[in-house]
Length: 369
Image (cartoon, rainbow, N blue to C red; front, side, top):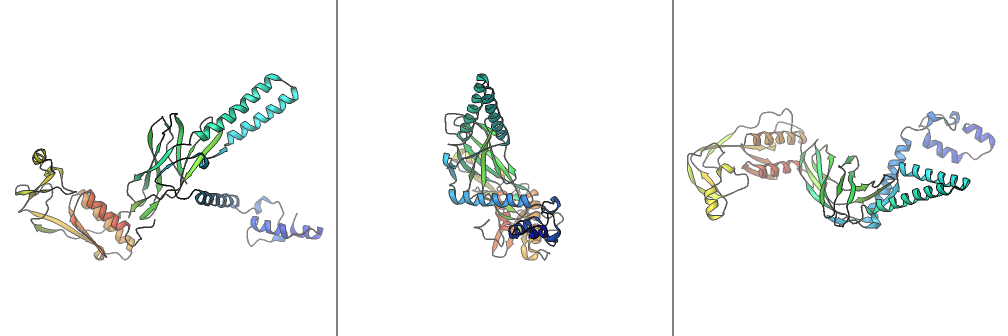
C-alpha cells in the first residue's frame, strides 16, 4: 500500500507521511514506497530511539538525585527494580499455570502455582533489599597514559548484619567483577574506563546492581559523583634524541656516583635513593636523613618545550613524555620547561608525577574534565 493509494481512498495521509519520514531514507520516492516494506526502514532507527530514551532517563535520574557526596549510603527510594527476561517468562508461566488450575479445578495445581507466585514476590523484595543500606565511596584512581584504561576504584561497604550477594558495578561499557559482601565487610570494585587523549577523565555516572536471587529481577542504583583522574600524554614511539646532558659540581648525586666524597647529612627529600639514607642516624634520632656527597660530577638534562622539533603541540608533549619516561629508567636528573612553568632538575616518582601532570594539563583548565 502506497501513499497514492491512500490518497485515492480519501484517508488523510499527513499522519502517515510523518511516520514514513522517520522510516524511509531521505531521497527516496515516497509515492512508490510500500507502507510495510521492511527494506525501507532506516538502519539504526530503533537503536537511536533506545539511546535517546536512555539519555533522557539518565538526565531525569541526575536531576532527581542531584550530585552524590563522596560517601553515600543507598536508600530504598533510589533503588530501582525491573523484571529480567527470565522474570517475564516466569511470570507468563505462572499465569498460564493459574489459568490451567482454574480450568481443571485442581487443588495441587493451585498449590504449586501460588507457591511459585509467592517465590516471585519474595525474590522481588530480596533483590531490592540486597542493595539498600550499602555505603558507596570513591577510593581513588592512578594516573595513566593516553590509550590505557583508567582504573577507578569504588569502595562498597556492608554495614548491615546480613550478607549481600552478587554485587557488581558498571559504567557504560565498563563492568567490574561480581562479589559477595559479608556483614561489616568493605570491598573495592574496579571500573576500567578507556582513555584516548590527555587531560582529565571524569566518571560522572556509574551504577551498582544485583540480580540476586534467581535472576528474576534486576535491581540497580545510579551514582553521580564528581570524581576524576589524570591522563598523561601518550609517549612518542619514535622520538628524536633528547638534549645533551649538562654536568655540574656539588649538586645532588646519583646512586652510583660521588659516594667516595662524603660531605655530611641533610634532611631526607622525596626522590632520594634508599641507599643514601643514613639509617644509623635514623636509629639514634628518629629523624630521616640523607647522606650528601660533594666533589664529583653530576649530570642533568633540561627538557624544554620550546626546543622540541615538532610543529604540533600534542606531538611536542608526546615527545617530552617519552624523554621523561626514558630519563626515569636511567635515573638521570632532568628538568622541564613549559610556557609559564619550570621544574628544576631532579628524579624520582614525585618529580616524575609533577612533570607528567604538567604535560597532561598543559593548555587545559585544571578545574574541568
